[in-house]
Image (cartoon, rainbow, N blue to C red; front, top):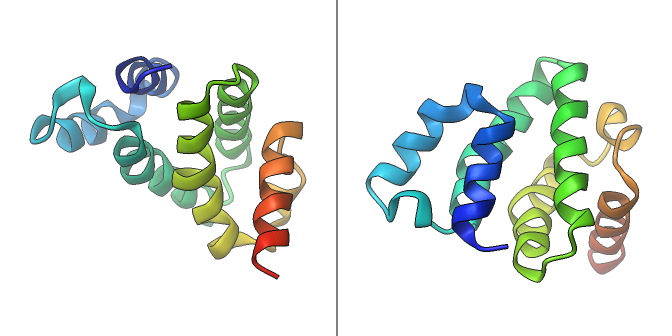
Length: 119
């Protein structure tokens, strides 16, 4: 999956992020903006905001979205999720019960790998 498709998938699933998305891509390459940038600067902060507000339903929705991307098994999109989302939240929210209870199978595998690598 290329950046454009991955970016549009984000907005399709989270239309509430369209303003943040547009601000991020308008000064770059539009919808062709690298997904590491988009997911790291739009989805990751939104996930963190939802964690801080203990918005369980939205956190679960985001984690399910992440799992659906990982299930497609595309190298680029897997790297975007692993490095721009999961690695970031693992360092900041490692002990979050909300996260740890709701990771999908593939997300959990990546989290476990990050933890093994950093111990």
